[in-house]
Image 1: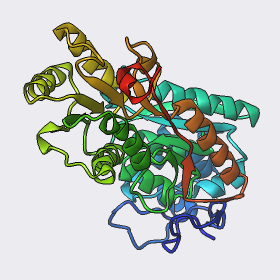
Image 2 (image 1 turned 180 degrees about the vertical axis):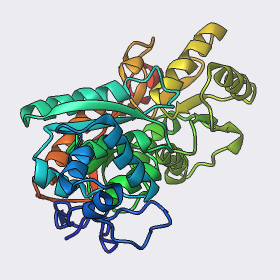
Image 3 (image 1 turned 180 degrees about the horizontal axis):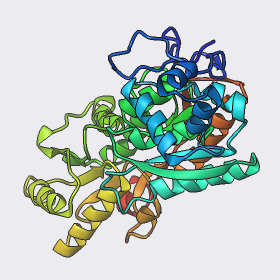
Length: 368
């Protein structure tokens, strides 16, 4: 079954990626030649080059001058066209590389999530005899990725949930094996993630069961699906426990330390007894502000985080949190990618395990 076939549904078993594409089939990126079925021979004829020269220029191999490579690439971009990735692999063999694609414009410089994704991918890739290329791309600009594809340097791709539709569209249209670490709204994309809503609901219930009535939520950008699901999990906890939540205590689109300081002032003024942060970086910044203000955790306010990293382990007290190790997620996602590249069956939606770590920041949730 073709991977990018529109009839593929969630949790449907699919075998491999489409390897039946003919060499040089057109991939149209909203160009004026959208309905044309262009081939390498078309490029060769128009540019006055041999088919083998054009093929080498696309593959990034062999003796081809830089001027010729430039002309071929310019022709391809002008026509909104890239040669079939699968055909190139069949013709030139495996590149021996997979790529970990990271967001270039992230503000999460403190988060270990991204380096742990790379570590997990490297561990699996080595076992399969592959090397790992790490690339940074802007959210809505897949041109760097397109360059990598044109040079036939990568056989499969590991992406994070920050990957844009433009990037995923490109990989899907070319039937290139790829796996997203996290959730994505993009159709027909293989992803692996834990039960975000369920896990965040469980973590929030810790504070509710401690008898807290006023619990604040501090979340990041709503542009990311993961943040929307974390917030929904927070709200669901109140519904499950039959408790009303106060919308005055919900703060979203929070990123900077200045914003955290403003939020803390507001929630303390309104009598917040506990706070749940959408991720580990926000929680680390929150703890810094609370310590600066002399607010004691958990005596004066209880704290829980909806993701885990070492940042939660080094706090005093340690933070109760959802444990969803990024390296473990990457290991499982990269193994899934390898299976896809081998033509094995796979599910579009894959679930990883999680656990709730109960620690000193919500110590009233258990007895000593």
